[in-house]
Amino acid sequence: MSYKVVHYINQFFANIGGEEMAHVAPELREGFVGPGMALNTAWKGEAEITATIVCGDSYFAEHEADAKEKVLAWVKEQKPDMFIAGPAFNAGRYGYACATIANAVQEELGIPVLTGMYEENPGADLKNKVLIVATANSAAGMRKAAPVMAKLALKIMKGEKIGASAEEGYMPNGIRRNFFEKEVGAKRAVDMLIAKLSDKPFTTEYPMPSFDRVAPNKAVKDLSKATIALCTSGGIVPKGNPDHIESSSASHYGEYSIAGVDDLTAETYETAHGGYDPVYANADADRVLPVDILREMEREGKIGKLHDFFYTTVGNGTSVANAKKFAAEYAQKLLQAGVHAVIMTST
Image: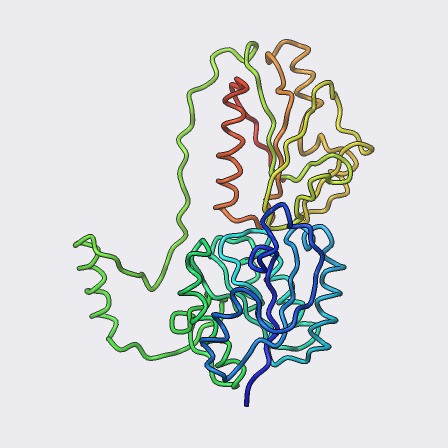
């Protein structure tokens, strides 16, 4: 028996193009496309990709409801034994699309799903809902990712018992599974200690989160001559959210001019954030991004100048790696603009 699989990929892996073609609408193709060949090869005839769904990353982000409706209709029509998305590696919008559509297929159609991506991908936030195989951070890791995904997918289709994440290669999802290690705990602990003392690679059995500690800069000596910039993770954007910053697991940030703006009114600004009640922020965005107060301080001479641009994103579910990437990029712009200090607001 050969199991039927429907595969979801983006425009890049379908060989349509890169970012310039991320707007392409969903399309259904017969058989495998691109990375589907690696999955088919690994299955050795026990399963095959009978259809591939291609969708541009920007299209999915900007037309999520429409894209989901089309994809779900096609998957339902194909009646596969499994739905696989990606792998997306560290591509943020692609990862979000893979995890989101996989979750929809699982919940609405009851079809088993699997996807894969780098652990810092925003889509990995759904690891507690869908099985996500941990991959490298770039497509260079395809050769290692495909066999792991293929093996796990086949076990799922055969109805075999799925082992712990450490055995199967998927990201820990909060579900504990008992299994027997080859070595007792004492020996494993000593082996790890020796490897650590010898500067050799080892893998901890209890990873702890690691966050940078940022040393504060020296105080600004004279605020009355300083240029101050506003940045926020509260999602304040011009009305209509022109850059389509996601309400959760943001894959990008926005840069907007406030030159000549004294007040963020309900008619001109709103929040894109999906992690708090937006009513008060939408009524007066100054509550999150205090442009009005900074303008008063500017007029009173308490600060030299409010910078002409503010930078904004959504902190809700956004990965630490993406947040660091955003800040590293716009920090250079702030330095080049001669900004002396930044006020970072949140929710």
